[in-house]
Structure formats: C-alpha cells, structure tokens
Length: 339
Image (cartoon, rainbow, N blue to C red; front, top):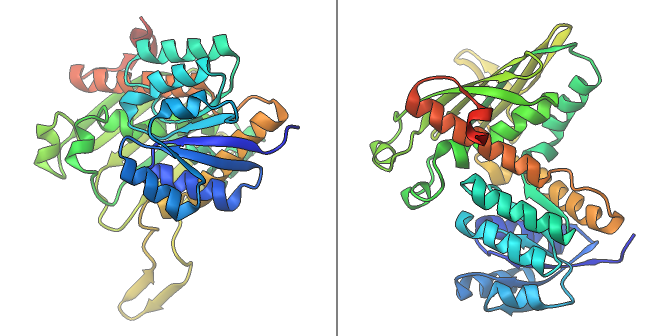
C-alpha cells in the first residue's frame, strides 16, 4: 500500500466541486493539491471554498508536476479524450467523468494511450456505488432471484438541463441514458447485444429543435436471453425518479425511490408520503464518495479500478446504437456500431 495520493482536479464546475469537497472532507487517503478550470474564477472559488492549496492556470501545469499522482477530469466532454491521453503520457492515474468521448475513434485513442502508459483509468459512473443498486447486484449474483428474465430501469430528471448543454452533450442517449446503459449491464453482469429505441419531444419543443428527444423508451436484448426496458424523461414534476427491478425465474428484487423521510400519513383525504429526493446530488451523495474511495484504493493497493475504460466504451456503443435505432426505427445490434 502506498501513502496518501496527491490529486489534481481539472474542471471546477458542478461535478468537479462535488468531487473536490469529497476529497477534502471525506477521503483521508487523498490529498487534493491543485485545481484548474477553463474559467480561472471558477478554479479560484473552488480552491477558496474547499481550501485547495494551489490553482493552475492550465491543466498542463498539473500534468507536468511530478508530485501529482492522479488527476480527476471533470471538464467538458469534448476535452475528456485529449486530457486522458495527455495524463497517461505524463504517467498520471486517471479518473474521468463519463462519457470518454462521443465517438469510438477518440475513445479508442484514449484507451490505447492508457494501455501504453500502464496507468489506471476509472470512469465516473457513480450509480454502481449506490448502496441500493449494489444490493440488487449482490442478490442477483447470489442466485436469489434465479435466472434473470426482465430488467426494468426508470430514470427521470426533475427538469431538463440548459439548452446550451443539450446542444453539445450528444443528446439524451449519450448524456442521460448512458448511466442506465451501464446499470443494465451491471445489475445482472451480462452484456447487451441489441437495442431498440423510441423517443419523442413531449417536454419542451426547444429540445426537439436542438435535435434531441426528451422522452424515450429503450428495450434491450441480453446475450444470456434476458430482456431489459429503460424509460427516461427530462421532466418528472414530483422529483428525481430512480427505480430498478430485476425479475427472474425464482423471484424479483425492486429498488424504490429515496425520499427525505419514510413517514406515510393516512387520513380522510388519502395516503401521503414525501416526494423523491430532488436531484442527483441529493440522491447519490454516498455513491460519489464511494466511487472516489474506490479509485484512490485502486492506486494505493495496485488493483484494477471497478469501472474500467472498457465499461465506459460499451456504454457509448449502446448510446450510439440507441440513436441509430431511433433514427432508423429498427432494432440495432451493438455489433453494427463496432463495424
């Protein structure tokens, strides 16, 4: 086991700030030493808020620093692959938010650089570390529901993201459903071979004008024979809707939404419960801590990260297949995207 890991943070936006706070306040084996952002004001504020010792004007400064062991890449998607390549060439271990890139050429170049350098790469797919979903995975792996037959995943946001984000994000299947694609593989430890996606613009016409959809259902066919269903919406008026179910030959397991409390009031007017937690920062607080803990421990103990570059690549393949399916109105095999 190595000593505390010196970390540099690239990207001081919303998710970068979440990781900064967790590294500083909750992960004792890590030392967040420096932060950089395309907007120097954001980096300065992040450093001040979380007592990060240094601010770099350019990510290259972090990569050139021999004292830095690892970097967290939390910048915009278009910078992920180039930064992974640069970090790998600098000998830094890498944690990168999803997706690696929006096309397989860039992804494969980044993964090849990581392989050549022999550094570790973990992709930020925090939902694998959620205690509820981990329990589902463990019950399925333990044979408690028998052979999986049906996987159902519901993921609905309380409100759409800004249009500026939608225009560069790769669209719903690559910025939102991508989490669910990874979860679909994770929950039953099986690969998806085919997807069929239907979608519509039911929330905001401006999303359609940006060549995206805001409502979608994707069916999945697994290599092992199971069938999956993912449903997404950009707007659930009651809060952040995150539910899964795995049904099998010997039973089923369901995860409901997390809420601020579990009290249920029954009176003459009806039965009343709290709405789901409002958004991902509240819903997945524990998982964000756990994923960074796992990354730091992979470096310290020289083990493989739990979410690999291959995992990140497959989710993008599934997203690209979903877009192709939606546009051509037919089932699409993942092998078509690989070709």
